[in-house]
Image (cartoon, rainbow, N blue to C red):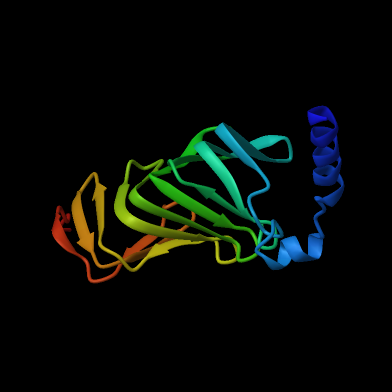
Length: 178
């Protein structure tokens, strides 16, 4: 008799459990949740068979399928290369998010950028724009060059950090007199 009751209850439970996907989605379903995630990820992009960019992240998560948005919550490191394979710039940050629809990378917390001339940018927030080919911030910056240290309240540069301009710049640096 106990076996019959158990079998009957099991059949009732299995036939009664149904999911209407419209109801599931209405309750906050998985329409735009993380679809891809990875640990110790390395992504490369090449142009005409030559490496152009190499990116490393400890953790990557796709946040939005709609906007093709990826988050790097545990840091990111990016290297840009010229056509001969030499590193032209390097960027690292403790947090980053990429939005393909908007064409932007946001880097936050302990952002460091180095170029091939040896210039070093330190800031807490930086945005790269794919469409403009620039990196910029409106937050405090410190740029160290061979000639000195420049502080400012923001900066804008080409995406390789070669031609930069500091907003409200101040600091101590050497200037040659002619």
